[in-house]
Length: 137
Image 1 (cartoon, helix red, strand yellow):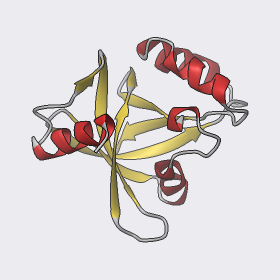
Image 2 (tube, helix red, strand yellow):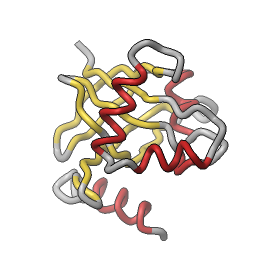
Image 3 (spheres, rainbow, N blue to C red):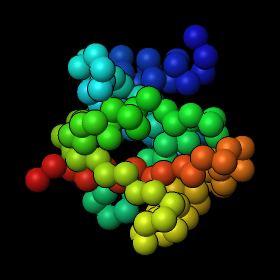
Image 4 (cartoon, helix red, strand yellow):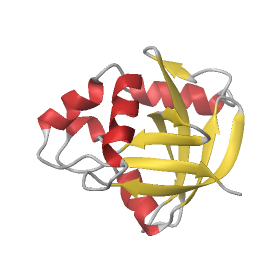
């Protein structure tokens, strides 16, 4: 098991009492519906806040292929997030590099993650999207 898998396992098994912060940044659990399987998939992800919204980055560590959870969101934008011990139904929207809001959102998430996302973007020619997750009304 790698460090990220252990982190997600601890976050999930502790009900969010352990794992909200990793390497100095806040993390949440994103639960999506598998676009092929229909099963619930969980991903531990760094986030930033934009008012009531949560900002996630589909960086996949700078890989040329986006993370699987991005495909799940594109197929079904209704998700669930867990921030520490609080679980909330939410809706996800993908914001791409050409969108008007993208530069501001990218700066927010990149600053929050100590510039790591700029490093990931430098590894790939794939424009890395920001995903905005808003709690469901």
